Length: 51
Image 1 (cartoon, helix red, strand yellow):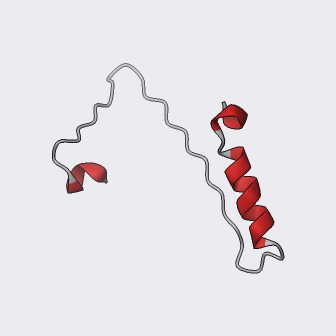
Image 2: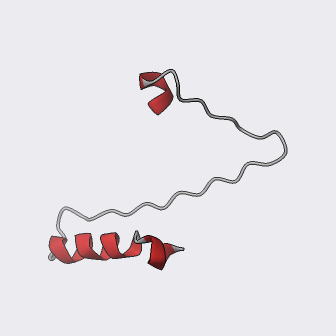
């Protein structure tokens, strides 16, 4: 975690509620078109698209 590398970074977990979400993208080793997969992931991660 970043807080281990930089002691000035702090985080707080609220007592009332905590909502975590994580998106994961993978490209299989045997993918036939890695460049297309990378372009797709980059497109999906654009703030205008993923908002």
